[in-house]
Length: 173
Image (cartoon, rainbow, N blue to C red):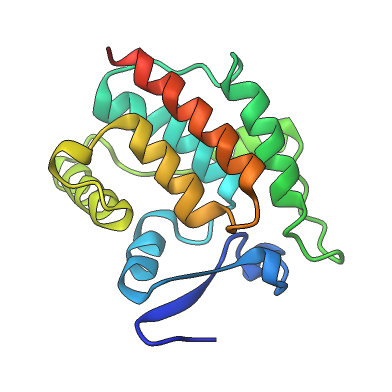
C-alpha cells in the first residue's frame, strides 16, 4: 500500500520471516525508506538496534554502552519480545541471545573508511531528521525505535525507549 510520498515499511522484513499484518507495518517517506535499506539492508530490528548501541553510537559519539547493563538489557529483552509478535507464525526466525550476538558480529560496515563513515552519518541524519544540533546519541536511538521499529499503538515500548534515551543523554553530560 502506497500513499503519496510514502511506502509501507515492514518493521521485521518479510524476507526474513516478518508477517504482512498491520502490527508489522509502518508508513514511511519513500526517500527515507530507501536510505534505511542503504544502511540496514533487511537486517532484523533486534540486530540493528544492538549494532547501533554497541557500535555506531560509541563510534560516532565516543561513549561506551554495555547492553548487558540496565536500562539497556531490560529494554532490549522487551524489544525482542515485541519483534517476535511481528513474525509470521510459520517462520522459524528465532531470537535466542546467542543467535542475536552472532548475527550482530556478522554485520560488516567498514568504519575504517572515512567515505563510508561520512555516508552513514549523512544517511542517518536524513533518515532520522537529525540535522545540526539534533545529531545526538539519545536522539539517534529514540528516533530509530519510534520512527522505524514501532507502530503508534506500541506506546509502552516507546515510553521505555524514551527512558533509555534519557539515560543515554546522561552519558554525554
